Image (cartoon, rainbow, N blue to C red; front, side, top):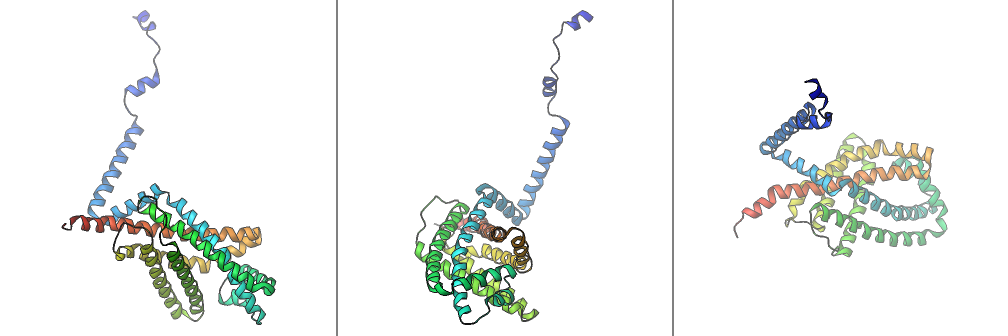
Length: 311
């Protein structure tokens, strides 16, 4: 018996473990995954908003929402450069008229010490060529707006899962975008003045911001490619985007100037650019998520209604 045992080939432990089936940890992991999946499926069947939220997350990951938001942030940053140059040209004219540009930027516009000082210094240096700088900035801003329209168009195509196409009515959409961004800039300036006038007007400023951004987002989504035909299918995403923007304004008012001040002291101009890009990335994320909200909402309600309609 002993000799027979000694002639047996050596035992392969991995083969034995494999022949015995999955380990306890593997079986526990499989049972847990199946249980969680079953709970999610039952929850989605019972509560439609859960299914819509899950679908939104899946779509965001599938299309690379973070990459799209980063692309939008970069395009917004490129748009801000000539816009800031245009503001400098306007400030140079104001400085020539005796206006304290730094005090206006720091106290009334709440730009923070570093940005207000940079604006005042640039305005002082461009007093002799303010008109030329303003015209150059205007042309560059229009071109940057056209590039931004292309980025927004691509984001909408990916979000709605449409075939790639060249943006149509680029000039019209670009003009609308410039008008919308100018409107938002004016609303931001008005909000700063209202917040400095008392708490009641401060609350009204948030309502004004929500309404303005809601209108801008509806107009933007209607102008971009989509599978929904009626304009009101863009309202859910616009509401989510406007609410997220109002919440983001709290960060912009309270933390962003301090962050820029700290980064500029430590890293100089690079710190200001990094802080600004971080804020613009959040703006890009809001636009991507708002677009996907419209997609999920239309697929759950709109497409079913269209498919069930006669003829």
